[in-house]
Amino acid sequence: MTVSAPTSALSSQEVEDDRPTTEPPTVPLARDTPGRPKSGRRRAVSQERLASLVQGRKAVLCVDNVSVSFDGFKALNELTLILDAGELRCIIGPNGAGKTTLMDCITGKTRPDAGSVYLVGHGEDLIGLSEHEIAALGICRKFQRPTVFGGHSVFENLELALAGNRSVWRALFGGLSKAEAEVIDQTLETIGLKEARDRPAGQLSHGQKQWLEIGMLLAQKPRVLLVDEPIAGMTHAETERTAELLVSLAGERTVVVVEHDMEFVRNIASRVTVLHEGRVLAEGSLDQVQANSEVVEVYLGAGHA
Ligand SMILES: Nc1ncnc2c1ncn2[C@@H]1O[C@H](COP(=O)(O)OP(=O)(O)O)[C@@H](O)[C@H]1O
Ligand SMILES: [Mg+2]
Image (cartoon, rainbow, N blue to C red; front, top):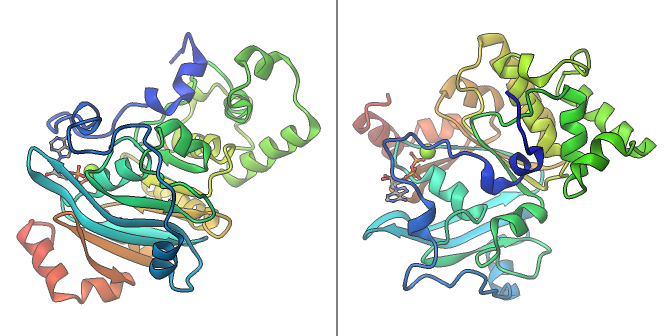
């Protein structure tokens, strides 16, 4: 893959949606519909409300009572979810449960009808900020399809990601500071692509491309990394490596994984949230939620047993 204007693919607006094509697009409907908060309307965080949600936990992100309707259908229904600093959280649930819509609301792609999203330590409700502003606050999302620059080497891809808003020309030809080069080496180590540093990204395997893209997101120093179905299309070995990678990334940052594969979830998850009909149905270890009769019913009903 060659990209004529590499900067554009780095901006979140350009990243393609993973939603199956049979599903309707989210963006046009969700923005500036009557009754929704107008885009750009900023709201201060209610510290009292935040404290009552957090209750002494080491929270990093709070989704507070968020509702989203599409033509009267509630994709998210007064959903409240609290993510702790450094945790690895899996979000599961049958098709249509609202998982992607939840990610869309956290990242500013969809504007909810009601509710708030708080990033602890940030004074403004994230609802009302643009996708770009939210990403700049360290909430980064990895989509299913890798969007690496195939004609550039693995190293250059990381260099471009690190450059962020700096011009691509400067990123590629302006030379790296020592600190920047160290960050890239460290990232190559983390994502297991040290050996592949000089290979064109287009020649990497599907799994390697996914890891490179995770590495590119790491360059943005995310506080929260959202990953949508990371192992789709991966080999068994790549799947195992991805589990290790995601586990290793938590701790320093919060990692949220939406995934269908229960074996994978069992391998990586410390805590699992089950969504159903736009709400949190259950939360706990995978064993705990699988022993929950409502969860069993929902999965059997949806043919996911
Ligand atoms: N832009 C949209 N317009 C209409 N309905 C939508 C839109 N986006 C999502 N939905 C509906 O909202 C529900 C939740 O969707 P989604 O968040 O994609 O679920 P999941 O990711 O859990 O499968 C589904 O019924 C879906 O069809
Ligand atoms: Mg989805």
